Image 1 (cartoon, rainbow, N blue to C red):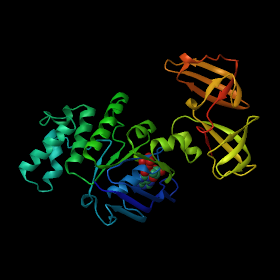
Image 2 (tube, rainbow, N blue to C red; image 1 turned 120 degrees about the horizontal axis):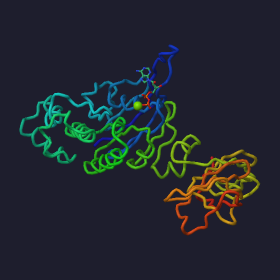
Image 3 (cartoon, protein in one colour; image 1 turned 45 degrees about the vertical axis):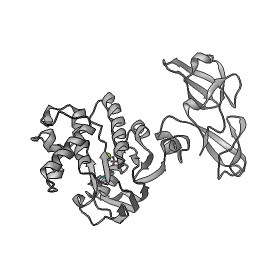
Image 4 (tube, protein in one colour; image 1 turned 135 degrees about the vertical axis):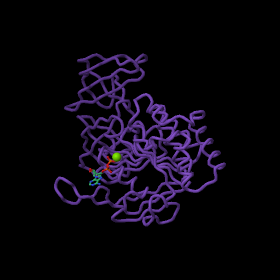
Length: 354
Ligand code: ADP
Ligand code: MG
């Protein structure tokens, strides 16, 4: 397992529509620890695949340097890099059986027959494809093809495993199963993994760290928890999970403490670094981060109250702002109906200010 470092990486493409150059990836620096599972997450077109392809060597950066295990690798062709890629399309060899698909990367490396057999069988066991060696790839389900693709990448024992949206061709249920399997296998092998997805729940569920990208740039790097509870920007807060944004005004600020005014109410928050008196600010409340109560920090009126099974879903007008609240414990709290006055109660430590 190796670490990966990107130092000021940029990639310039020409927009086919306008004929103009643009940065698909701009001045990106990252440090990926050996043995960790890191996800590049962001909307379509933000530069995830381009970043991954530069690490794999299918594209070369226009600026910056890529390091693998401490060694600069910009000049190395893909096959000389200690990486293996798992593609969305699986990229299996159609006229080969499962064994030969997995063995392929070892054969071209001139490894002995006995060793190939042993390594292929071990990997097939790891991905739970034992006994399927002689199946042709067109006799496999999507999930099984994905396992074979993973086995092909793992069998050459690369320092870093790269994934580009590997699950997007699978149905929703299988996607959830496969993502946890990929995570378990990665942890078992202890390999460094860089995984590209636009699916935030996929990223949350498998990553040690998530790198949020937008328009060719890194917006934030952090654990799923850090990113969820401490989004660095409105973009991140909006992209990860649901979020309510409330306009706030800073009445006074001192260190990380600040008194803010929101919809006619005033209260103190303790985690607002860099605030200044008179600033406009945005209070971020997750739908599950507040509960409805008789008394609370904000006051509003219920405009929607819906039973959703595992939770009660509310919309509440607070001043001129509509807030969404999910109550996952409605059995033990009173249900508010449309038209009722309700207060929003939350721990000011649990909300976030931008
Ligand atoms: P993502 O994987 O995040 O969806 P990509 O890295 O594939 O995004 O693409 C980033 C941007 O670069 C997009 O605007 C895309 O259209 C553009 N792009 C990707 N490949 C090329 C190329 N070979 N030539 C020109 N533009 C490209
Ligand atoms: Mg992509």
